[in-house]
Image (cartoon, rainbow, N blue to C red):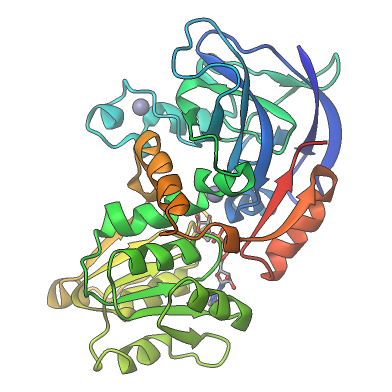
Length: 372
Ligand code: APR
Ligand code: ZN
Ligand code: ZN
């Protein structure tokens, strides 16, 4: 057993409390990771807001990187001292979706997300001598250390700074994969990206890497549009200045709309806008996660007559064991930006401040640094 400091969320709508918790030794097939850095993602905020129902109390955080401290029985993928990025969909390797090569849709991982436990119902976190605390997405990295399943750690090259590597656990892989795997953007095609936050900026830079032009970024915060340009967007639309986003994108593309439109916010009205932004026969990719009760209305006649492809993208349809090391190689080669994604760094005690910064929209990403 190890004592850790962790940010605990007791209930929906509350502030985080940094408390001392007990963390069990890793069981068979599990790994204990000393967390070095954890990104603050909008999906964590969805939990705080009650838009993503998961069992509480829990230690949140699902975008992290660190160093392996201990491994349980039978673990072969990593050893103590290895640098790892944590994956929030540890594909079980056995279910239908894992077997057809779609591990991001793993049924077991989804079941455990809802249960708030590790495989087999294991709970490795508790209050000192007391009640159990739930895991979040099998990661729970707003903590000095965490126990995760072996499939949830991706070993990485040790020369990548871990505060940058952490972001590849969610935002970068989600955005990059939406472009490279889900849409398969072709060179020379046009792209619109609605939402230039932590994930959207990665959609933008992956579209640029894929040879797209123009790459139109749309956001309601001007500072985000400046960042979008830094990440390679060729045009920007300020959503705070116009209600007609579809018209603004059409004006930039001979009245046609773009070959691809990505929604990276997670709201019904922006999903409808993204659908409108794609040209006839174009592809619309919904990356943003709306609350479970939300519905989107699409003109029924347009479905056959405009023949658009409307699809979703969960975790960038990625294979984390392949994509995460590849993204880090691209970063080290200067082909993808990670440094510019980290707007602010906070100690664990700054977790509430980091969430305030996310709510206000002032940051691309905040990173919690766990090393004391
Ligand atoms: N119009 C235009 N831009 C908007 C609007 C809107 N109505 N609402 C929000 N935005 C912009 C914000 O200004 C911000 O730049 O969308 C961006 C969202 O970025 P983040 O808050 O950083 O969220 P991020 O972590 O990128 O996640 C985006 O993807 O994976 C999902 O759950 C995640 O639904 C979330 C989405
Ligand atoms: Zn995330
Ligand atoms: Zn599976």
